[in-house]
Image 1 (cartoon, rainbow, N blue to C red):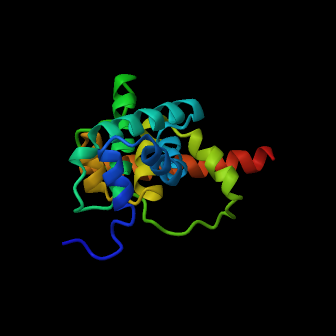
Image 2 (spheres, one colour; image 1 turned 90 degrees about the vertical axis):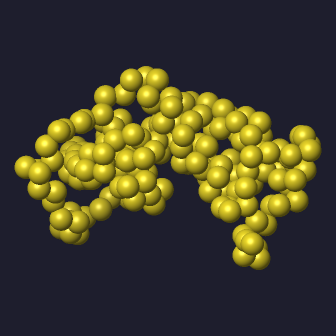
Length: 184
């Protein structure tokens, strides 16, 4: 049995299962901003993120009968959004870096940088400039809170590939931020 308060929108979800457009619109209003942010961080492009958001909500309402209360509705919807984005990236045949032997690569430690961090908008612009594979792993790990095991399952890559791409994304992000700071 789910914890009290875990499914605060249960009535809306039930109405959506019965085909209520009003309930669908209300759920869209409640979740669209957060889901757009998730899609945008993965896609790195506003128009594509909007497309993925619309497709994800279409999938959500079509599949709402399969929603089970063992997770929150928001978590279930976020999974649909992420899967939709990943499918789109795969269709574009995004080039992700695959390396067979990771043992020879040492990952840099997660130590604070001496660099003065710029404002969040500058960081967001820098993340957008990351290569797609780096940006996806970076976004899923740091911004969405997935661990490398989960990322490897979502993207169909090895856990070590996820760790390597994350480490390289951080290094590339530092270089981009340094360039942005230097160029003013």
